[in-house]
Length: 246
Image (cartoon, rainbow, N blue to C red; front, side):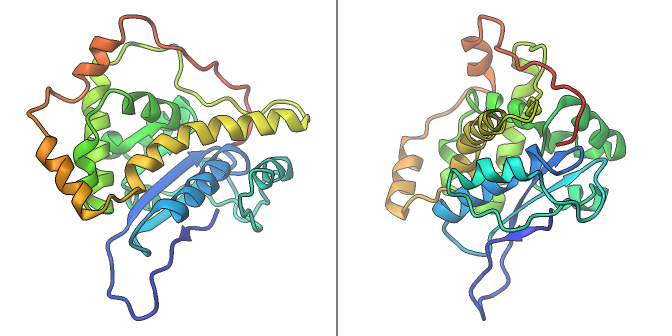
């Protein structure tokens, strides 16, 4: 899909942006749905227009394919403004411009890193990033500007990876079959994954609340220790999706 921006007001000074990139295969189902859900969340909660850029791309995508109408219908039922989104191919340049690269499957993540290994510390699957988020300290992020917040969140998530319990899969299943219900379930699952990440990344607290956060902060253990301590049991995994486009 084409990049979607929260435009800055006319005449405003140039601003630094936080850029989230969702990566799938064909860029016609899961990844554009994640983009649209994330963008809608950013538009509702972000302060500082012009600072947020959300996009998606597909590793096997061609230019300009329409997004699956069943997925768009499921998004529209959630009152998401869908427009006429079209697929776009993945490129290394696009990934390098992103502060966080969020793939739909582990195989897609592997292929992104195969194309550009230095993206390791900011490339996750969407399921993986949301799972890691539950175990990292995020209060201090509210004191940062949005672009710095995304980079610091990527650092925290990456630091937590070695301490997590192993999972069979961090894949997001592809909606299967032709039933409307399958696409509604897929959109619901993606929304649940996007919501905590977008809350941490985009919500901006008032200055007085920021000061309260800073005053309450105490020395913290290394990122991810709490995650490891809390995970005394195997993580719930998501089954590998059938081969298809995303």
